[in-house]
Image (cartoon, rainbow, N blue to C red):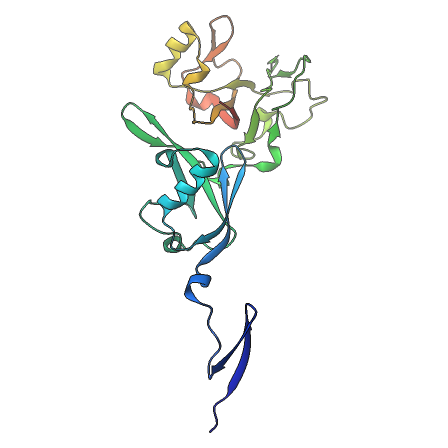
Length: 256
């Protein structure tokens, strides 16, 4: 039986192969054209033409070249897994157009804590960018003054229908954006343990002590149940002993 011959074009060259299709060279097959790195601030970093045998540590070094974030402070997650420095992109089945999430390692007290927010906890349709907004208009929530987070970008947490009803968010029957509605909870920022509440109420709260990344400040936006708290330090702080009376519903982020 005569051999079957097949002419196959490959990157401008004509190659003849007997009884089998031409295989792409190994080095070419290992190239990942685009990898997307998503930061907590919502920015996307694009790395192009990365070899699949690149280690996670080497990937962090590439991120450092553009973002100036030290590799030892970078935490990368893909497919709900934290990527280990000694493993490769191929080990994690990272392919073209894969999306990797970047968070930072926060150092404190001689240890390292990793804060990771799974995207399943986010509700993008309710995100709002206050970064370049300023206004002297008065807003009310839960019949208390609502200080909108001007200068910050708010990332919404997925909290709708998490409780018995959504009245605490004031999502129904609001006449204007300036007004409160019935059964709505009050807006507050941050949240702390009972152990720290006294010192904050007494001495005030230093924004520099919040969960702080190298490049961003992060503050929780919460709702506090009316009549379930005490007011301290010239009406700047709500103190409650029951964690069920405070519900985070957003993350506010801005450049440090």
